[in-house]
Image (cartoon, rainbow, N blue to C red; front, side, top):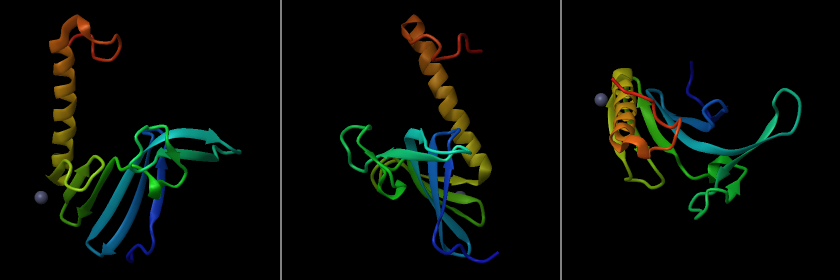
Length: 137
Ligand SMILES: [Zn+2]
């Protein structure tokens, strides 16, 4: 397979995320992800106009209809050896992480889920109903 010229844009409607993939070098793929805020079905086969929060907007319903102009959710690159660099949040330098292999991604995901659940547990009966598991452990 050759290098990707231009970009590949994928709308993952089940996750409400749009991902733009680009490639500058043979051994790495870059990605930019933005959260889909609104979807309007415009035609057959789920043809749709999607809306994303405008980069730098003070309200998340200040929408743009081009994902290139959207607020960033995640940005990063995955290298041939499974190492990846990820930026979380809106600005460069925010929430930078280096993850090694799919096990690094899995570990982060599991850690975030466990932290989330534990925080819910620690708040006891103050939590919003159906937001946290009923009982952990
Ligand atoms: Zn690594």
